[in-house]
Image (cartoon, rainbow, N blue to C red; front, side, top):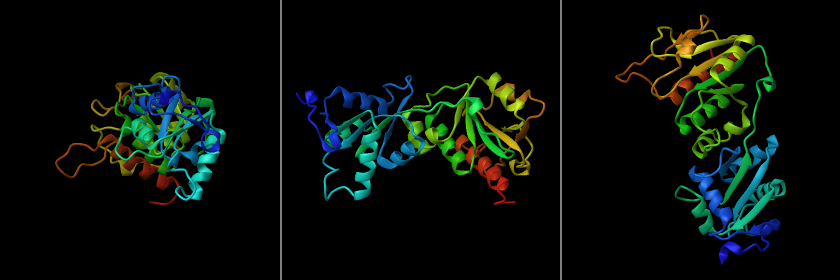
Length: 284
């Protein structure tokens, strides 16, 4: 039976068949049905290799297409990346193209899958500086939105993100894919709302609220200092607790057409870039 195969493949990896428990576990993780509470996440593709290795993240396992990684087929750079991954991984499996298709949840399966441990960040590990941009994700429910916001924050030069009233696993495969690695490369705090507000206040963060009831244009806020932008739930917006803060700065993105608001991911991107670029003197 093919799930009992464990002969040695390229770089000393074990050979795992399409029906093996290892392939099934990877498939369940990528579909969102499998593990995640244990802090493991899965990436589809070699794009994550350099990021994971550069940050020293624990790599649990690597699955790769044994028919792709053969001399004359794979590029030399891919061989080097795979060799580094296999060397760093606790487990490595050579699998067939059909097994890759079984693991993947989309058309056109990739040739490599990596499971790794999500880094955890404590508040005291955040490196504070005079000018900082952070994004608070309050009660958001769509993993794709969360991943896209983390990606935009990273691209805009943000320092860290904070998640409160969390409703989605930070290891969710759609979140990981949408973030393009920012979910595990950027520090992300996961805190109760009261503790997060206390920590931000104690460290002199200005609280900027993206709020449809605000009257102040988001372009009019000062970019100076430590700023935490709060982006709320896709349907109900930010929690009332934020509006109770006397120092909070509510802002709105003007809507010039018939719609009332932007997708929270697009809105967060606009606000993050507006602040991030001005903090660095790249935009007035």
